Amino acid sequence: MNAPTLTIVVPCYNEEEILPQTIHKLSQLLDSLCIEKKISSKSKVLFIDDGSKDSTWTIINKACLHLDRVAGLKLSRNAGHQHALLAGMFAANEGSDCIISIDADLQDDITVIHEFIDNYQKGYEIVYGVRKKRETDTLFKRKSAEWFYKLMKKLGVELIYNHADYRLMSNRAVQELKGFEEANLFLRGIVPLIGFKSAKVYYDRKERLAGETKYPLSKMLSFAFDGITSFSVTPIRLVLSMGLITFIVSLLFSVYCLTMKYLGRTQSGWTSLIASIWLIGGLQMIATGLVGEYIGKVYKETKRRPKYIVEIDLFNLPIQKNN
Ligand code: UDP
Ligand code: MG
Image 1 (cartoon, protein in one colour):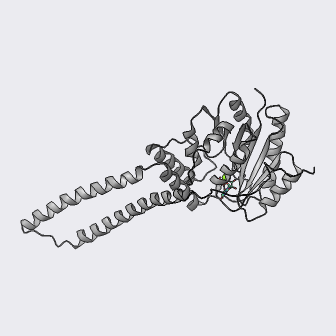
Image 2 (spheres, rainbow, N blue to C red; image 1 turned 180 degrees about the vertical axis):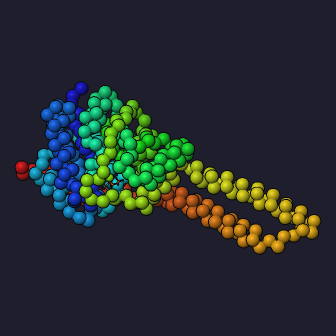
Image 3 (tube, rainbow, N blue to C red; image 1 turned 30 degrees about the vertical axis):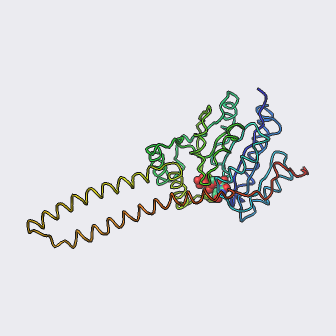
């Protein structure tokens, strides 16, 4: 097999602190892979500026001018990590045999990219980077991630345990990704749905070298909730079962109350009355909220708005380099 053309896709949002290091390390890695003849000399690393407010784009633009291996894509506004990834993969799709996605902070070990390519050469269309351990995470993040994967499994969603968005995809697999048109994008759930022959490569994940996480607790929880509701209708079914159970229990309770009344032993009843009003009221609100969440998702999907808008594409329309 000929050496494949690889594009490494890196979404960046306010990453000025780490970006110079990332550019240096990834272009160096591509150079060495080219020298080993593992990948073709046309291989590149494509940085996507996801509407950053700092000097991220200036850094990318400058690197594009001076370095052969670097290309850039500027989105018109902040479209979010998942959409930025998609923008990069689709822009790189035409000119690449395979695409690797990786975060800008290089928490994921780039040395395993060798193994990614080896697996691709063996015929695997998708290679998942899987974290061996989660010791660099806080106890809370570790535990919540564990519960999330367990919950998703219970809900029947196939996810690769401890895999984030560090993966290799063949050109064909990325092409198939275009068929998944959903606006509520959760790539970790979608990619396994493509099927094809896939492999896993294990690695150690490091701490972020500089800058702050762009996924604080609230954003992380909302991402997880989005993942659940985009992939499973089980929560809405649970609401139905909860409603049925409450209805049956209240029927039995009514029979009990009527019997008591008939026997002349009526309760004063304030506590039970208030408790049930609050309980049922709470349950109803949860149920309505959950149904609303799904309706909101349907609403978003029906509008078919563009997921992202590319403002400048220095991958498909490269600028004149001046080394
Ligand atoms: N990111 C992005 N758009 C956003 C938020 C994040 O492109 O709206 C990028 C970010 O620059 C990084 C990657 O997504 O390359 C993952 O973010 P981060 O490392 O902060 O997440 P964590 O590793 O803490 O979960
Ligand atoms: Mg990170």
